[in-house]
Length: 276
Image 1 (tube, helix red, strand yellow):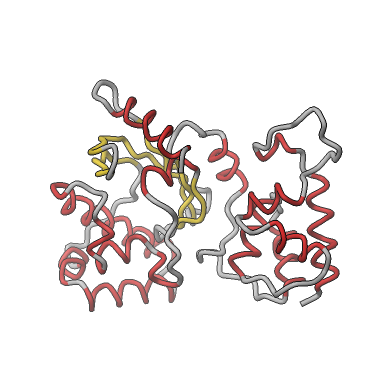
Image 2: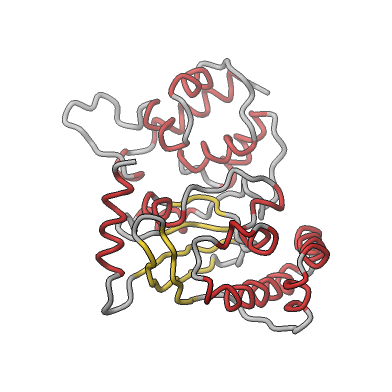
């Protein structure tokens, strides 16, 4: 790892970002045109002390996931992100993994939806980043890595993954997940990651194997869900998705259908989430 160059590059990218571009309030006494170190640390989800060490060219080598978080916080282009990985001494991760570069347009849209639960996920349903309301609605991003990071995989292998979905909708959600996966497999040309996921699910879940044999295919673009929240209760929401141009990532957001109590429940969720 090239510690000194890594720190210098972080500092140069931090200086060029204006706080308003990343949703950071601009105070009257602000002394720097770009972001402060503590602000970058907060955006990347790491301690200020550790971030200071990185900029100073010392400290432990950051993980691939941490480099990805820094790249998102600093709004790096794909070339800049690749350079950051090189300086960190880390291999450039696959485009579809948890350390994948969040498409800038997706990240920009996500940040423009503060009053709506929203997240950016991979085409295999691994959450890359989500806003505060999405965390309040669905819980924190799973710390799992590899295949287990995929919510689709956990849906068929971990009963707890279904706890926030109404039992009456489990069968429907299973069919939608499998049909969507078949579309992803076709688009990706049956690459090793998708083939491995299909094989693992086919051997570990009789439900998945039976649904896969039905040959249903449909890209998941919208759906209505009843989320079972432990504090707010059942919330009926419309879930919509916007696919990136290459189909590798999706912006998900939840809206309240006209009528019903969902709008008030989301407002309450926003208050509850803000006190955690």
